[in-house]
Image (tube, rainbow, N blue to C red; front, side, top):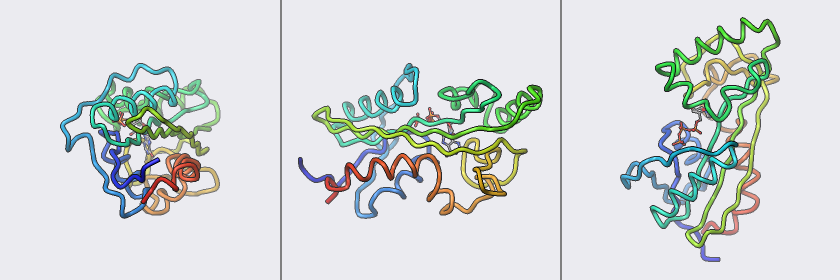
Length: 197
Ligand code: ITT
């Protein structure tokens, strides 16, 4: 298998793009589908894995580059795992993340149940010849009142287990070295690092 010296990070989400870029080897050239004018595919998978595979396949076929894609989201136990794979769509439906977070806090409070939740990330790397590898990472925690302005998406309402602060209050490098994306990437890295130049 030839060595990879550039990779398409198949996401339109800037927060994800930065985290994935910073997890990958520094000398690897990172390309965004936005730079190539490639739109997002329709996400009709039923699981994080199906969606990360679908995105990697789509962006890889369009760009002809080795592609790494991410599908991720927040699963809240007392809401039967919602928003889950619909995390991004909830933000769109409620008019942005601020409103979606308010809505989530209201819904969680109404259940009167505990606030256990987890962030899940499925990463898929696909080569132009169709070879693909996926890994899933999960980080458990609790839903918190909205705190902090760091990070992106639902970071201000998620407090990882064993920590007193939300991802929104955490320093960038701290979150980068422990979140669901990091956990998935570390598993994947073991299988792909020999391909990096
Ligand atoms: P792409 O499909 O282009 O990658 P997207 O934002 O639509 O971008 P997803 O469909 O995977 O991505 O949706 C994931 C949602 O979960 C999205 O709203 C994120 O902001 C949120 N999310 C994922 N990881 C997160 C993290 O580390 N911190 C906060 N929110 C996160």
